[in-house]
Length: 232
Image (tube, rainbow, N blue to C red; front, side):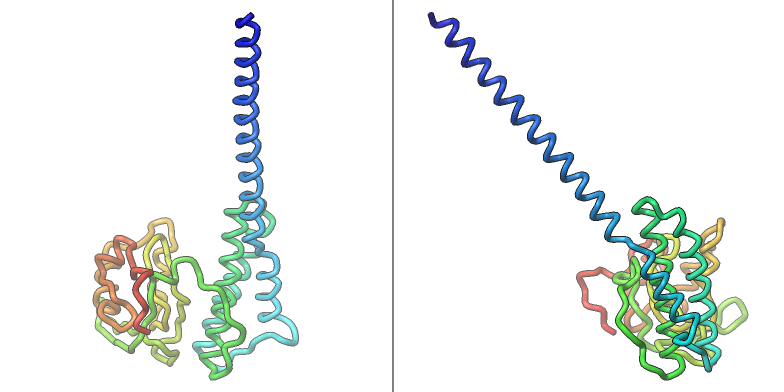
């Protein structure tokens, strides 16, 4: 008499275990699907590309009146081309994010063009990836490097017409600010950063307000501790 009862009890117990396992598996699938949907929705590059295009072309386009503003709008156009080129392939969250980052970077350059010409900056923009740890140039400095003068400043001038919105280039932090040359662009090549990039960083930027890290930190890709308030 006891054996059938035991058999039924074991059967019920196994059925409960199987039901719990299947339920948890279903929950994981739903969570994974929702996460994938969220990732895809988080990066929607199309509206940002449209917004950038509207600020570069058409009746509402921003116009440049200074060399620094011209340089910024040229960079904004390059970002627009990069973002538009990525759009047809932005079927994955990673590619969509790359296209969105390019468009947002272009909008930062448009914003900088306005500032360089003494106009209002316009609506706030989301920061670029890595901007929170890259810092920002908080004082003007001019140094001698490689037989030429190199300058960095928090404001645009004839000596510092090249803007960078702050972020990472090939894994290294580049502070937001205005520069005499696009020294970071050399790293955006197949060769990557040059051997003397850390020395250049140390000479021009280390110790400036808003840049509390040195060339070694720059070379290792450390940047500013996000938990420490930026002095600027």
